[in-house]
Amino acid sequence: MRISQFASRYGPWAIVAGASEGIGAAFARALAARGLNLVLVARRAQPLVALAGELEARHAVSVQPLSVDLGEPESITELLRVTEDREIGLLVWNAALSVMGPFLDQALDAHLTELEVNIRSPLRTIHALGGRMVARRRGGIILLSSLSGMQGTALVANYAATKAWTRVLAEGLWWELGKNGVDVLACVAGATDTPGYRGSAPAPGTDGNVPVQSPDAVAAEALGALGKRPSIVTGMKNRLAAAFLARLLPRKAAVKLMGRTMDRMYGD
Ligand SMILES: NC(=O)c1ccc[n+]([C@@H]2O[C@H](COP(=O)([O-])OP(=O)(O)OC[C@H]3O[C@@H](n4cnc5c(N)ncnc54)[C@H](OP(=O)(O)O)[C@@H]3O)[C@@H](O)[C@H]2O)c1
Image (cartoon, rainbow, N blue to C red; front, top):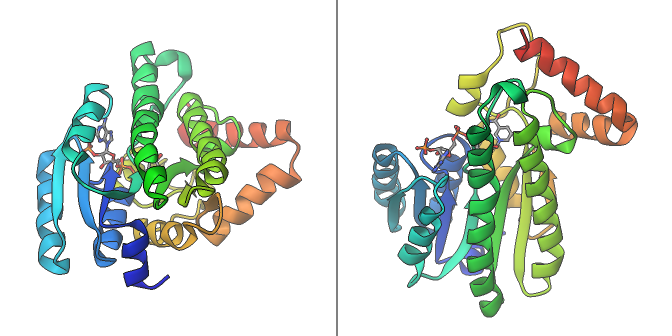
């Protein structure tokens, strides 16, 4: 799709939730380059303000930083209030909390916050903005999922479950909202070189040479797939791994393989 076509289909404003770094910042840069004005959401104001300045100077778009904690339900009230008067043509829900480690070792509150950031907050936002998009019969929604959510994954069991929810929700809405002119996509990423990934990266030599994509590559593949399919696994090697796990291996073997790999990378 040409840049001007992209802006008229998914503009004039986009929200990127989780935009201060990593894949979210890559989406923000790619969308500004396509001429979209942006509302950039994350907790830390400073990187949002810096990114907003960079994008406004480079692309002649308007960018509004919004510093809120998406683990708090009121943050969505604030997001909807701030964006009430703007025509939001695209929502990218990229923010996520990933609680790593044995399920029972983590506080219940941490798991519940994971549900708030990864499920309840996007659900609230999609429900509100999706209605506005359907009324205009135009728009797009991209939800970030993960290879870990293609099957149960030990040591990130709750996170992986939220990412399965994300993918299944996007695929269902792809059909349902697609009839009303709204494109929905699950972007299923594998390991991606972001601060979040580097912070949790396993010791060298324990990861079985996991292929690592750049954030820009993930954003570019997702934007290229929007409107064409319900979900995309980004990266050729990730697509091969996903096909092997989901189609060739029996479910039990796939879950065991993921569990053994996680034990080796992150276990005691
Ligand atoms: N990186 C990978 O290897 C990988 C693999 C598969 C899927 N993914 C998915 O891709 C997405 C982005 O991953 P990433 O690695 O780029 O993450 P990241 O580097 O950890 O960045 C996460 C972004 O979300 C924001 N965020 C996190 N919690 C928030 C909260 N409570 N309220 C508001 N903003 C919050 C962070 O900003 P603040 O800290 O400033 O709030 C940051 O901008 C996630 O949905 C993740 O599940 C990533």
